[in-house]
Length: 341
Image (cartoon, rainbow, N blue to C red; front, side):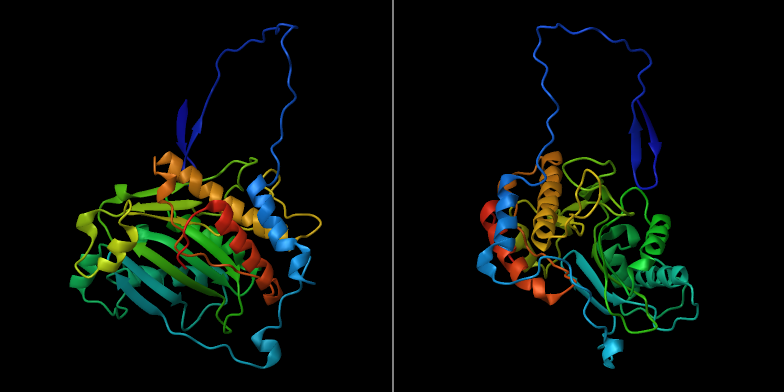
């Protein structure tokens, strides 16, 4: 077996130097290959809950997007970049390039990440003002490798390949989890970022899961991100003002982020055909559950300690809200896990 460095993570190759075929015993029972169902039984219940007749006359397909602010003559609300810290967690939201000097979307993406880098204190020679003193930055121990999760907002999904190419060049074998959606940004901005970073010098506290092969159980990665990131919070990493966080994580002091999931069919990486909002919802929830379960199994984390703290649902049209609410209620029952939102 050999190990090489892939685009995102180390990849193992198994080479068979010698092999031969042996005729099997004709009396042996030959079983045909079993293809697992697209949805487990519990997630079929969720699909039925999201698509049942008791919901009324709701959407059965993905509708066209709602009119943009620009088409309605209404300017979106511009929110300045915000920063926050609680215990060992550090967040930066609404990161964008305030003055775009280049028409290149690649340059804009890179400048957004440079803004994040400056906020994290990694670009000390940039000359950009920073709201935190150097003493505080040293206390945070932050750089881009401390980023655990990122939300990427694009004005058009046509820029998806570009943001992937930029992130390929920024992160190594352990990129953060990511959710990437198309939203109505204030022109001329085309990219906006939210990040959540973990402030600790012990990099062994951070574990990632990559799904890079096509299978039946969950979709493969379609970009430079981890399917999950798990951070183990050591007691020494908790600051004096983090009692609330201690209470929330006192079970095992481990936090898991799961990347955004859409209703892809894992075996062929396509969307359901015919289109079905209910099936997309059930598949997305099943993917997230399988990724988190595989991560917990790999780290020997007890399933009984699993608490869902929050989930963000992005929809093309608000008409699907009722379906999502019904699916979420059904998912809480089948998972039998407490949910804190």
